[in-house]
Length: 304
Image 1 (cartoon, rainbow, N blue to C red):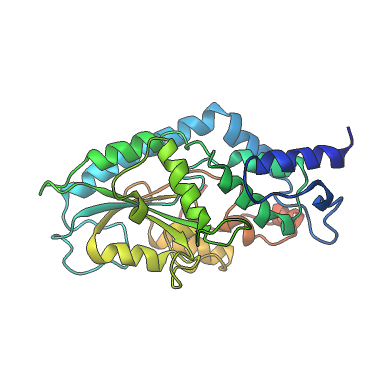
Image 2 (cartoon, helix red, strand yellow):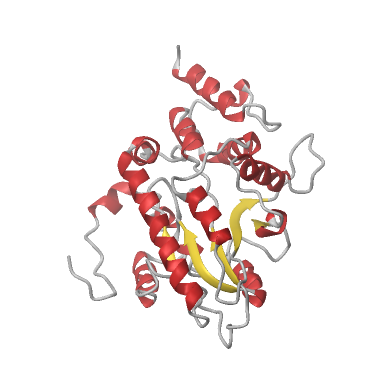
């Protein structure tokens, strides 16, 4: 079987029963001047999909996050949102979480796109097809964490509310009348995994669901912070915690990390994701140059 026929088969499998598909005649034999999407990500994707080490790491992080949540609930002044100031002691507690590769595992479409040598221009339609499948499993430890968090209460007896802030983007889809089919898909996916709750529709906050909700997540976190004390934040990207880091240099990102040195593993918990992220964007297109670059000195004064 030829490489291109294999690619076509994989792309059709990716679309599954989704409305949005890429037809066989749309499969490109090459990306021209662009490098294939996720080029070089084979080992990272395999690590997520197959390794006991990833599962142990994710489960351990979520177990530690529950301990951090207990500590934060006991302290009425505790907040995991740097912009949340003033007297927050009267607010009910909340947890903020990213979704993709924090709660939902998207290593399957990553593997399919790698096998198909998918081009960057194909990504949007392929990703939307994956979302429409409603088939993502959970990241190890995520289900147990969310269920346990929702059962926890602050000293005043107020339950923890879990908000899911995602950059899954609302968009039109051929043959679908919903204004945001991606929201419908994500809700269905979460419910199928046993993560439903009476407030889930409002707890889920997509990119573009409101005009002011863009890829920068700070406005959505601040909306939550108007009515809730954000006790914990869980994500897989620096931008899930700190604003304006997507376009920053490596040194600037390191400085941002170090400004909140004491928050990591206490208020902020990062799920490992070597497959993609803002860390990769800042490296630029020349991966060989990035590999050859010497280590960046830590802005925290750390050594080793």
